[in-house]
Image (cartoon, rainbow over all chains, first blue to last red; front, side, top):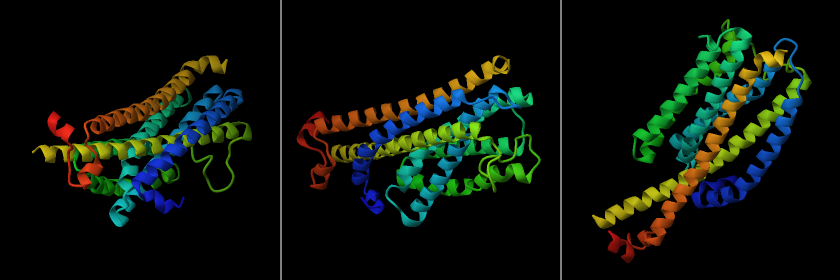
Length: 242
Length: 66
């Protein structure tokens, strides 16, 4: 099936119905492997066992940013190409991206307390991720505020594209400013600075969470298409009765 | 020693992640169930998009109920 054919909601539903069970199965297998890797991973020579929190914190950060990146592409699809599934994708992704950003903030805070001696500091990395979380909440609120989905989609698309400025700020905040948060150690120019014994479980957990993210987004998109069908039927029923 | 000292933080982090993942999975599954139930209810009452396209926005059973 060509990607362009998925632009049709009915075809997308058929594709999602077939893909989601396979993706869910792959996610379970990936998590079984990743959790085993995380359990047997050695302690870090400086951070001790708390390095295991990194296996949750980094995927949360990655998926929080990936979610907004996908929403930005969808926003272009809404504003420029008026792609039928673009605003469906944007609306479905927002709560999932928000949840993973929340997971990043909470696990980071629980990692920071034993390592830094504090749950929170207003440094550039932490603050810019908090801003991303607040942007997600703003987008979710906007979807709920405007009743007409197509009008809401345009307003959300503009907010999403403006908010995308936060993504490079998050990424490069540790280079641009003096932060308590450590500099990039995985996604950086040159090789990662983490030992393979810890890097492999980190990649395994990131892969498993990414599979989960894709499965959830497809599921939420399927739900959103069904919700719009329900809305259409309600409007038809109301117009017929009146 | 290190593990014992920081066990609470590690367990809390994994519990929080578990709650986030569990919440997301439950939300997607329950939402799907709710939408399908509503669509089935419309179907049962004879309200379909096809009936609307053919000029019968609401079928007889639906009019009776309304």
